[in-house]
Length: 450
Image (tube, rainbow, N blue to C red; front, side, top):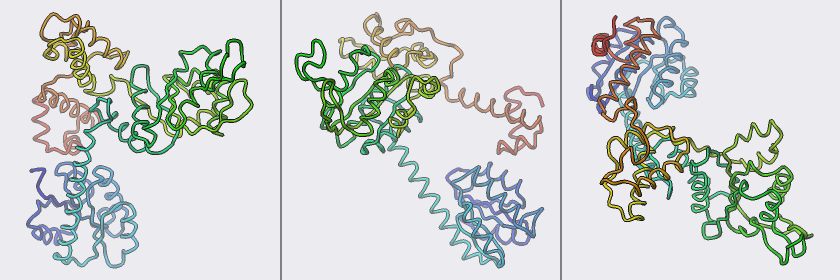
């Protein structure tokens, strides 16, 4: 059955109504189910856009428990499906309850096929519009933040989050391993905010000795300490009107954590050696590769500070967890360095692509950039090879051939379901949403014994 066809599932246990309704909807491919198990099997196999569901189904034909259970499972398996509850005249309260559970609409017996056809047509049109809207949103999501190169669902979701929170002065904590691109996200939050025309000031809390970090952040007055020959404003004050990015905030010593907490609460700074409070209007974005919750348990990071800097958390996944991103990023980096070093390279060889995709990238994007940069300089051929990258192609990596990918997925699905069903063919076919003959064909294809 073609997926773009209009598909209707009628769940009704009365044979007379089944016969009547089957021929009322000429413009739909109609399937009939008399009980819950049949309805769920049809739902998996045919994926109907609209379902009419009788509230009273066997074994509780005079009640509503089976109808509600069926509704709940349908919406769990296919939440976008439009379910129209068919009820008796005395079941209005049950119908209202069904709407509360997520049913699209209800219709009271006796059946008027013309009126029901209008409700079904309206439900189908709504499903179609929602599907078209999702497709448009997916196309829109193809565009990601400036300088953020990705096509993985995890990173696209992060980009959408950044776009939503950037206009708000909300303190954000960016979490992720070294080399995943935390500063890129911080800069994107600044660039998309109303503060974009003002300064973005970054400071790495791990790169500055503890003795100097306080003066770097808060500034100092002339004579505050030996060598303080003039008044100097700190990074926080320097970022006034813009964004302050505190990288590796987990490395702040405890005394400075207390002073940072006070600044976040009061939005004023006091320079070393000074006595006046200076108001500062700044957005704060923090980042760390450390496990902050573990540090709180060990009392090396203040819990109250954590809640101040994490009004919104953004956790960046490892590069190896971002399916397809390593190759996409590698191509962009190759193009950039080829231009920079005036090398005419025609992309990556097949063994290089396989190696990039299968390698675990413990150093994340930073390691990828270093390897590609070195390969561009050292390559002696027109393409960058796995040897140039100092990587080896993994023969057990995920295949690029679409048929191989599909076969692997089908084989794993059949094996998993057969295991769950203890080799019960009928039950396995129902769970997979296919017929018994189709399941036998797949088992034969993958040399699985019955």
